[in-house]
Image (cartoon, rainbow, N blue to C red; front, side, top):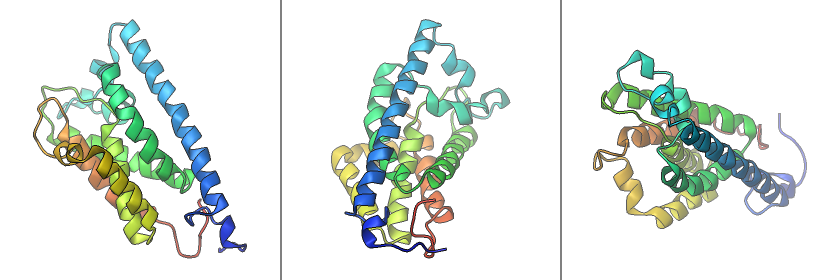
Length: 209
């Protein structure tokens, strides 16, 4: 069902008051997520770092399958978490601004696409943790959302991130560093592309749902 009102009330229309209001709320929400991740990392360090080994993804092993869900909340130290925090806030803000329900469904889809991709294709002698798969998923989501919904500001965000991080994004999805789970990045990115199609905004529903 389409809602009436002027374009200034459409949160999906770039430049409107509703758009900036939705973006502001999303930014605050994403900023609130980061302290939770730091709290988890601090607790993990205080307990002697048991979380990574017990709740991370261990490829090809049943006991490591639960890490598909838990791994995005864990990191290999604060340096790892610091490097993920800024892109997670930046990209997550624009994904969340399009609607909480779409954000939740898309994030869950990306988490499982990235995690299962790691579990099926990763090195069984490794433990994989971190939110970078979700970050690459958001990148793919915004790119595809811009194309399928003709929302070019989404594409603009991807280009901005590309300018900020450049070659790191390309290297991130290639098997270049044994300490980096390129599988999580690649499958997260692919999951984001698919999520943008599955949870796209319908033509008769211009407001976030």
